[in-house]
Amino acid sequence: LTQSRHYFGGQQTVKDAVREKRKSVAPTGRRLSAENILECRRKSIAGLAPSVATMERREINIQPHQYTEDPTVAWEMLKAKRPVKKVIQMKKDSPVKAEAVRFVCFGCTHGEFPREIPQGDILVITGDFTTCGLPKEVKAFNTWLGQQKHAYKVIIAGNHECTFDEQFLKTSNNVTDPKEIALKQALVASVASNKLSTPKSLITNAIYLQDALIELFGITIYGTPWQPKIDNWAFNLPRGQNLLEKWNQIPSGVDVLITHTPPLGHGDTLRNGQRVGCVELLNSVTKRIKPKYHVFSHIHEGYGCTSDGYTKFINCSLCDENLQLANEPVIFDIPVHPHTKQHYLNNVKKVMKRFTKEKK
Image (cartoon, rainbow, N blue to C red; front, side, top):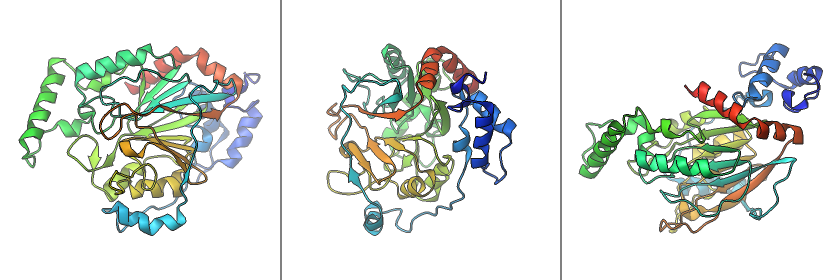
């Protein structure tokens, strides 16, 4: 056991793993015991628990911005102290290394399937993979996922996955738009005719995250579908406190954050120059969460990569504003020990089985 370096998430011995606990503090401020740490390591090797470092939560209180309803004005107030630097993307034909995990990211395909997907270890899809979440669309997407050779696929929903949002499907007395009523009725009928409680159950070839955390290759990944309300589709919430409560669920220190919406200031500009990103998400990411990578889509015009000097922000929308597949997936690498990487590559079925069991 002590010879298996990857078992302890990169630590070579039990003593090394116990020593790491001195650097970690539980969310309550209580130090983690050695037993807690080793149990975390045992679970994390199956990809089902956060690492010890991720369990540390900084007590930073984020408040709704006074101009949360006007992102363009909010950005004018914040931009002087929020650096945004363009980042050159990795070349799609860059060789996959034994000492790094290759992420391949895209979103907003709206029912289309990209023809060429770069090789990699984890395929990340940031929502809007259907037009409206019809079961037949989800089935086709799941079949396509099964044909991809990436060891793991991690996906979240977007505002177009209407059937994934149970609250959206409930007809509200406040809804007066006949088109919206007709859409909801058609979607509910389609789900019922397929004898499904939720089309999310049709996703069998990927890890679906909805306000949830997964660890793969010792890398923590958190996924959440919510976005500021700009239409009456799925996973829409009012700006300010409502969205902030969702962002507060994200643990500090995750390595890769996947959202559907962009944060304010990064990949969130419409063609007319208006900003539409979420200021509370920006503040949460830069002040508390501090991920290495923040991957999103939603705003098609915002495709590209930027950095604030710590986090790399990636808008990986494949469709342009005309809903044409005009962009390419974005790739990046995170270094890991070769033994850790090989372990996860050798145990894909085991990890997926454990994830499926936990999900149920």
